[in-house]
Each structure stands twice: as C-alpha cells, then as structure tokens.
Length: 363
Ligand code: ADP
Image (cartoon, rainbow, N blue to C red; front, top):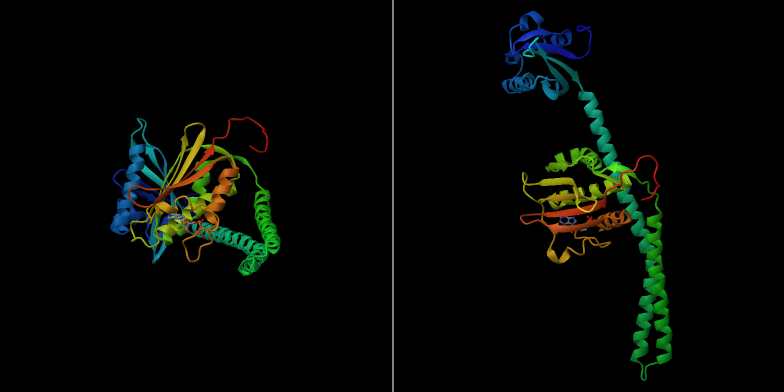
C-alpha cells in the first residue's frame, strides 16, 4: 500500500533522522530508502526548508497529536504545495518515539481554487459595475427631461421678470410648470428606490464571522497584489438573519474602498483589520479598519450619500448601497476616523433570535 499511494509517506525518529520513506518519496526527491536511513532533511533540502520541516515535526512531538501543515517544496524552480498530516508514534507510556507524515500534493488543486476565486471576484466586480452603471444611465436619462424643462421654464421666467411691468400671470404659469416637472423628477427617484428595494432578497440565519471570512478568502489575491496585510478577528457564532450575498457585498465594498484608500501609502504600511463581535443590546458589530488617508471630517456625513465620490473613476454608489442594505436589515452603518491613521467603517445588525425549526421567512 505504501508503495502505491500517490502521497509522500515517511517516518523519522525524534531527532529528525529518517527511518522510512515510501516509493513516491524516493521518486520525487531521487533518494533511496537505504541511502536516506539515519539522514535528516538537511541531506535533501536547503537549510531553511529543512529547518521548517523540523519545526513542524517538533510541534507534533510536543503536542503528541496529529497536526496538519501546508508545506511548500521547491522542485526544479517550481513550488509544490503539500498538505502534510503529521502524527506522532507513541510508546506504551505515551512517550513519542517517532513522527510520521503523509504529504499530499495539492498544487494543482490550489491553482484551480485560486483561478475560481479570481473568476468569482471578477464576476462580482463586473456585476457591481454593470448594475451601478445601468442604474446611473437610466437615472440620468429619466431625469434629463424634467431637468431640461425646469431650466427652460426658469429662463423664460427670468425674461418675463425683466419686462416692464413683469407679467405676473405668465410667471404664475411658469412656476406651476416648474413645480410639476420637479415632482416628476422626484417620482423618478422614488420609483427607482422602489425598484431597487424589490430586488429579490433571500433571508436566512448566517454566521456573520464565517460570511466575512469567505469574503476575505475571495479577496485573497486582491490583498496580495495590492500589498495589503490583512488582520482578522472574527468571533464565532454571531448569527444574524440576513441576505448573505448582500452582506458580503457590503463587506466587499468596504474592503475595496479601504484598499483604494491605502493605494498611495508606502508599501508595508497598508494594513486592513476586519472584526466581528457580539455587541450589547442583541446586536452584532463588525468593523473594517484601514490605515489609509482617512476621511476629511467635513465629509464624514456625506460619504454615504448617493453619487458622492472623490475618485476620478468613482460612481459614489458603493456606500449608498451599503447603507440601504444595512437599513433594510434593521442595522446601521457609520464611519469614523482613527486616532492615528485611516478610517473605520462600523456596522451593526440585530442578532438572530434562537429559533428551532422553521420560523417566518422575513425577519
Ligand atoms: P466610490 O468608491 O465610487 O467613490 P463610495 O460610495 O464607495 O463610492 O465612496 C464614496 C467616497 O467615500 C469615496 O469617494 C471616498 O472619498 C470616501 N471613502 C470611502 N471609503 C473610504 C475609506 N476607507 N477611506 C477614506 N475615504 C473613503
């Protein structure tokens, strides 16, 4: 069996000397079982790598229980990623006398996962851009007409005022037209709001920390390429009744904004902290804290307004959407500047009640 499994299997004594390697090990690292006997990882691998293997082995020996590690081995210039399950062999007194390992090559699997993640992220991006783009262009189109009518009426009104004597009757009619067009414009906006609200939402009990963790995983390569170091403190079992996709969209928007706010900061100082914790009064509180440029104090109240943006390519819709999602969930979102550097966006959501079985669909 050991000769045929596709995994690398090995056993070392407590000093790290090889006692056994299987056939896959021999093939991969061109080492014979007999030749390896009594040698350590230093005989095969660069010193730093050998030491990291030894450190993992020692942890297993000290913990006296199986531990899983991710180990990366450079082979002909290409990194191979291994998932290694290491476990101690204990004698009758429970004292370890050897450490065994089964290492499976997950390089291809990781590559596929990474590709899937990138794909999902780009779809998410495209979706966001497309949806906000469609909303803005239809809004612009619908509002243009009443705005143009208001403008030409106001201009005509000014001309009538200039006449001697001013024509009060004409002015009256003009002002009535302006009021009508203004109402039309606001009806367009109300209609759009209603349409956005109608979008299907699916509420379920979700673990907020876990949902945020999924977003972090999804954005993994985004953080890497933008040189952002991520710190998570996500409490378990903070359950809320929510539309998971919408809440994840909020976290994605906030994280994206944070990354953008740190783009000009020197490398090595771009830190992002994500936290989820139970708060008082049956609420869950999440925070997205960055070390970016921060928000000028006079704009703190404006950033959630629709179409407010300070970016040349910005739409100014992200935070407005975040706020409407939070409010529709009975929650709240706000921003504060940090004492040292950057901004923190906080959000709260009501904790889901403990219900066994099927409850009402909407909370
Ligand atoms: P957009 O990103 O398209 O500008 P948003 O609604 O997401 O739209 O953000 C509105 C504005 O809020 C941004 O243009 C920026 O000025 C400000 N802002 C948002 N997040 C941050 C942040 N983390 N740090 C500093 N400013 C921010």
